[in-house]
Length: 378
Image 1 (cartoon, rainbow, N blue to C red):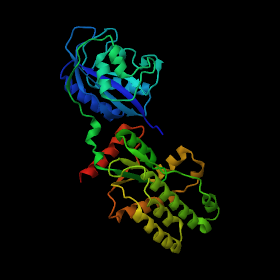
Image 2: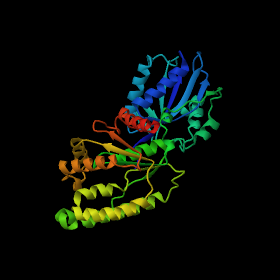
Image 3: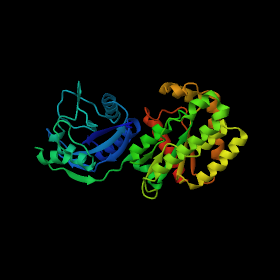
Image 4: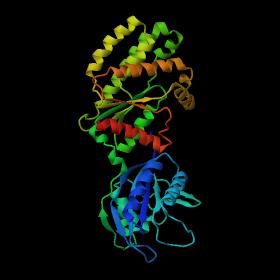
């Protein structure tokens, strides 16, 4: 499942403090448009098409769910914020900052004021050399050539020299200290979405809960008292099998894994649906299984208030979820929070995302990453 687009931007500056301009630009793009996951070296290149001071140039990989038109609109706002005054009729000119949209996935786009891939990229070393640094599996969708092949045939013979390395803004979030992160939350909290988004940004492996048809589910809705134990036992067996199978594919000491569930969710849901005696038996069986399961290095619980959960459930439109009540969601939230309090073998961080939209709003996504980083620094 692909939540985000891979976007390549090229940045240049030849006025004022060029390095500061570039670094501020990288940070603003990261804060306002999407996640900057890779940055090239910084190059010094001669001005193109006019006599002026040399440029500093770099390229970056951006992950975002925004459209090309939305990206272009925000890029122009960032240029303006950094002091650029555009004069569309002035031709080539010096500029404090210049941001070009070079590629958007492998798409070909021709609309007013926007052509992707950038129509002149193959003729510009100051675009091609930084692009090459990004080490992407990308081929020009029109010319059908890799970046390395475009560099070999470019007519541009200008001298482009590496000045220094540049650091990606994402590197301050040091998730590489973990091997296994589990993200949990109530129904509709967005745990799967966050797991996928973080996995794309941090190049992690994913373990996602698979929802096979459960033969006891329709029977449970008809007669909860009779089929609750069978339903919860079948869910426990499925989750144990899925988690065991998925985790066995990876090296828990080398691979970076992000999962959208942890097996003790079975215990929490069963406590709500089962009678006291049934839950006591279920707990005995669960504890045996739980001892065998690998424990995540970090357990993230996404808290959302019930009104927001109900709205999320309604918006995603799954028919079998539409009858879920506020009371049921309250019980689940309460069960999670109570259970988390008494955990001694889990490294837990609870993040309130009730007023956050971490898919559409980059600031909200960075809020979550910063909360994780704060936990990591403790």
